[in-house]
Image (cartoon, rainbow, N blue to C red; front, side, top):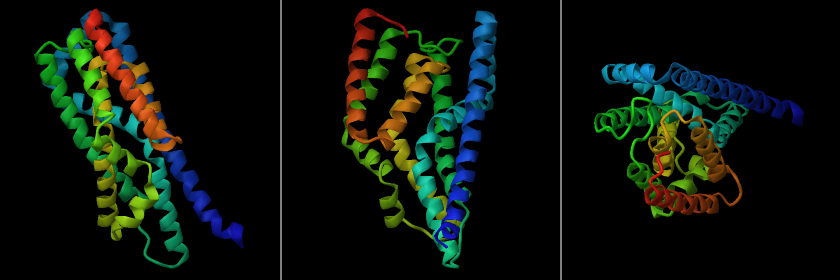
Length: 258
């Protein structure tokens, strides 16, 4: 009997994990292909891409949206699993059940809005020639300033408060539970707001290291996982902050363009 009661939860987790993995893999596949095309086509294509991006804001927005999906989805799995587990408990108790998709949609909606802001910011930085047609930083001072600012933010009370939220999914679900599809969407959006508060400066690091720098993207993704899910994640955030400050200072002092 115990196994039969646990099976729906195991099944749901398997489906969620499989869907999450598929979406994440597709997002990273898209980014790898895009970075490969830019690198293989050379400066002439990069200049053309710059002009195209300037005219087609939608394409730039889509690129940032895929980046956010690829980098943020893995670290939010504990919240999705917790929400799904509560829905499974309700299903067994013959209570009203809300699909987990509504929670996920609310979460992604906040990051899609954030992606739009990043796309507009990139256009502005390209106009100021702080980012090249190949989407790389052109100024050591600019790169260093972003690195230092991000490092400092890792030590701020806002970062700490938002990170505490991101590390305690059960507390969030117990204190902010809302019924129904609209309620689940609002819960996802609320989690997304905390997540942006925790990670928004880290998401701007591509402006310092190259918007399509896959190594930095992967590093940020791993850092987010460690901060939110690993034991001592708060210490990881502070250590990373100190490292970013030193790196940024070195970039400015030695005039290194990442």
